[in-house]
Image 1: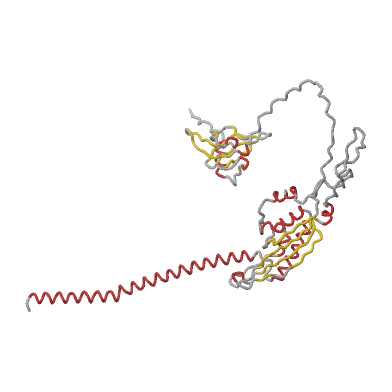
Image 2 (image 1 turned 30 degrees about the vertical axis):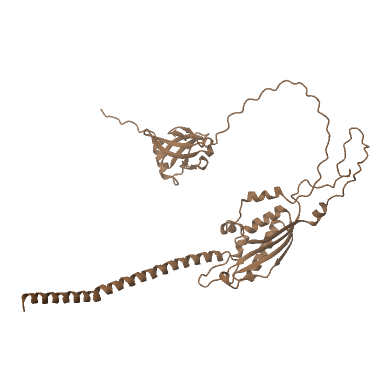
Length: 406
């Protein structure tokens, strides 16, 4: 065998060894490792999906339990009884009269996403003023259970409708003038006296027809919940804690509804009284001019502490004057007079002002950064320990100079 043949044989043997080694390593090490990484990635994705579903289910379970807590009862018959009794109590509390409540047949969903959801409707016929009806609706919308108004119809009571009927037209022939000079002309409308009517329509009685509905949610085995306790409906403090209310406006806005009552009776205008010309004015001495009014009081309660800073080594507070909101803030330094006292401490969170009382004692007030002066607080060593300690240090008398023994 020549040297070249030996060299080629060695190269072929080395190639076989390399190919066989790579095949063995790929089969025994690399491929299993790749499969293991692929399986780990797949299982990690499955785990993330399961965790996401678990969080979603936990949130959905909590939301469902919260919503089911606004259901009067798991049984729609018991919920209808509680709903009926509560509406009757609300009507009596609001002052409605001739209350007639008629429970309707419940509507139970049998398909879709609202299976076994029950809507309980009660029709109400009553009489009352507009203020009483407004009070009733406010009370109803403040209830902690699901509340909805399906229909509302208001008409004046029959006795007011008869009172508001138009009068017969007056005769086109003017009446004969038999009045003596100075005698007052009769009211318009044929000269007859108009019926006595109240000058205020707030007592106008209305006939009210309502349809009110509540919702009963079913119980779910995977999310057990507790319905609303009926005793809460009779506890005003518990009602305030259970549900803050769902009113679209403030109670003061609803209290103004009767002031613009649209149910008003037609009233004849008052008669026109012709008064004689007033006598000519009598000359009189000119009145002593009144002194000009003093400056308006400073609205200290609306001033706002907007910043604390150091200016040339001296602590400064910046106060925003509401009367000049677009102008620059007013700086105050230590021992400056402000509000009703004197600044005794300037701190990064605000300032402390001492107010001297009539008996000579002082009261320290804390003015916090970003809040109006009306929100100030009395300096309390328990609530403001750091400020209290610094005030004690700032107001402590200076130490006497050291004595030198000779």
